[in-house]
Image (cartoon, rainbow, N blue to C red):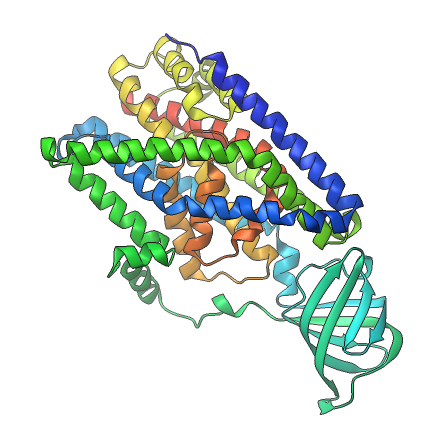
Length: 493
């Protein structure tokens, strides 16, 4: 059996070293020289725009070619039907695990709490200069104040915040509409100490209570676009996913007449993979610039410390979800449906799992995954030859779970309240996005843009999690390969 070549491993290791170097460099620049960090932030913004640019063509190409690759879906037979059922089912279970865990742990809890409660800094010193209140960034490390009402505790005054500007270690707050006990007063002057912020939730997702029937009707209606090109232009993700799946299924049933179109989408998909590889070549620079800019906005290391603590909770949530899915859900399915010992099966799959962790690529690990399945776990060549290559393309349990957790974490950090409709859209989009997630390092970043846009969340929130993504990418890839291997054991029976 062919072993994974050294070339992909060396390329992936070089990318890992580059990303780590970018993270360290960006952290040092933004942490010690905040203004320099702000000046290079534009390079990170370009990287995010680059990712957004390729989302729509990637969805269409990956999903059409992925479905068409199955052949005529009317003739899949029991092997194909069970394989697809297993992949969709386990991916859905992983996403559900991630959603429940992130809602329970709430790693972005500070942002969510601030959307509902007051922030009080009784000793925070301020100086009033005209219509502007000047403070040290260390007095108020919270990054999003634009939806707040400002109270000067020592003067019993209140005002609405119009804008917030961070410059190095200083925060400049422009406020208007000063009142004392609900009566309008003139703007204050001088210096003082003690403030309170009454933060308001983001109004985008403050929706009235609706029944489950209304929620399902809204989601289902959103799956069918009146104009597919308008949906693409408006970044409406779910209707584009629906169209792509239908087009791929239709082309698979057209036989010879559809072969040219399938070849076109296959070529387009390969081209998109090349573009993603190109994006990954500049990823160290883009990630470093985003981290430098984020630290610059926070005024350096001191202002970023609260977010760094939340980032640790986020990473722990993702790893916890991956552990539950890989150590509980998948072994239980293997035991009940595959009638195999999960521990022994896992030990014999370890070479593939270690390779997946080191390369962060399920595609590069595929030859070794097949070898472990056939030669060590006794999976038939027919099953392994169909289930595992297909799984390396469309089955991304770990990636889907990670995307669901990351998107909800970003919402929590921004104080955005997600209701049942948004959570349902996240569940559907993260599950379907696994089909379009390429089996290459960091491809989950591209499909995360897809999920964020589906619920209209700020794509810029990705900047916060990039510093830890290189490690989580290896963890979720390992779970992806383990899910493929468990699927082969279940389907073979």
